[in-house]
Amino acid sequence: MKSVLVCLCLLFSTAAAAVTTEVINLQPEKGDMTPALRRAIEAAKSKNIRIVLQKGTYKFFPDYAYSAYRVITNHGNGLKKSAFVFDGFDAVEIEGNDAELIFHGQMAPFQFYNSNNIKVRDVSVDWDVPFTFTAEVTAVNPQQGWVELLPLPGQQARVAKGRLLFPDVDDFNYPYPGSSLYFDPVNKRVVHGAWDFSSFPSRVEKLPGGKIRLYEELKQYPQVGFWWTSKGDRDNDRYAPAFQVRNSNNILLDGVKVHHALGMAFLFERSRDISILNSAVVLKDEEHGNRVISSTADASHFANCGGDILIENSRFENMLDDGVNVHGTYVKVDAILDDHSVRAELMHFEQLGFEFAGEGDEVWFIHKPDVSRQQVDKVVGVKPVNEQYVELTFSQPLPESLKVGDLLENKTWNPTFTLRNSQIGDHRARSIVLKTPKKIVIENNRFYSMMSCVFLRGESHYWYESGAVTDVTIRNNRFEHCAYSGGEHAVLTITPRLGKGFDARQLFDSNIQFVDNDVITFDNRVVWADRVNNIKVAGNHIRHVTDASRPPLYPDAPVFEFSNSQNIQLYGNDYVGEAKELIRADDASKASLSTKAPANGSQPAD
Image (cartoon, rainbow, N blue to C red):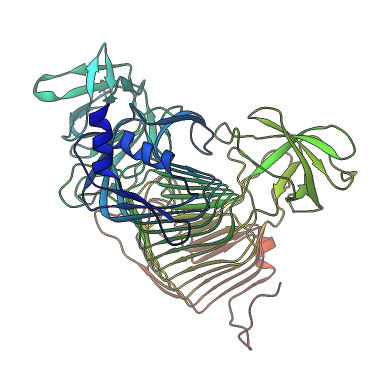
């Protein structure tokens, strides 16, 4: 015990600043830093603290980490072990000084709950052993239904009882390879034309020379030389984000790098005023390393946030889901309890326990088959039933037309969003997914993603992520060879996904400008819009470039396509290419589609 106390004295010095700031100085030492860090934070007497990490490498293990049951949206709820845990702080500042934080096993590196004025600067997060599997494809036999793989160095995997076991860390392994995707080892991006799939081999054999053979019937077999990647089964492959911020305000992440995460890199829930500056979700050794996966889910995710969100001068690459996702949440009316109260149901299994609304929040009522936002009322009572159901009481009598199966959407918790001077690409899924009704600005960025670069999709189905956008400007961006895998996409795709019982032709999103962008594409689709009111596509420079490595995937698709839309302005766009069809529009869209610039340069009418 004395040696531990002496070690702590050597590791930390704690002193009160002029006002109330308590400073914790941390020096890198060999071994597990988790116990010392935990004691220092728990011993803090002030709710205003500053942690100074001296430059160096810090290792964190789960054995003596803080442990608590956590509800984490879009991840798996459960008992989580965490290193940097802050709950109920008035101010938290972490000065990283380019410190490298290396985590081992199942851990949630940073958790900020119910706190204000959070600043994290100049720190990187990585894992000693990644929770993914990557192997070179050395042989393929579709007739016999097998693929031969050579696992790459720097990871842990083994074959036992006919199963592939990884990451083989602290007795944890995924039950089967699960979510899998082929990568190009030269460019370290998803293979052109590849589709992700769930791998469940009937058996796995260990071969000489460290190779393994997976027996599995696949719709798409890889080529020899591709890198096979897997991240495990859907029930276990999202342990926790690298940074989770919940019910907090005024957050700044500046110079933060995430090289790996067991889920999302940055997750914000019901938090307000967030800035991510000069930060990155990228591979650590981009040129020579054997990894092609950074975070195993989204780079950044914002669920029911408020205030202003800004991402600037940042780079997100090689994650296995979207670069940015900003959305609210639809809940379904499960029962009408009385004139003022309903029981609402969270619809997706990874939303269970999510705080849909609090007292004082305003909520929209949405009545099938109409998907538009209608009456608004204030929540005056919240009574959770369990993680799936919650009882909500409103200040006014419920709308007479409200019925079981209708939806509720939180009006209070929606942010403005700005993405500027950033890069997102070489990853699975879409660059940005946006579903906030407040002002959105996307400018001066570079996108090079597997699917759509800008994806506008409110959905009252599966994910139940709300809702319709009403003010979007996408300008002066560069889009390079996007939408090259995972199905048919466009550079800008606008496509509501509504559940049964909703009008599939009703206008949904509105007031969207796609202007003055540079698009270099191997395929045809640039804008694909469904159920939009007021869209302007103007002043864009589009160049169609193909080569042997990037053949067109959908050569018969149009460059611009509109359906069930109105008030469309499409003019002043330069196109160089050989598309068979430039514009495709259904009758509803043709009625108000103009290909001439307005005489006075006006914007589309509201």
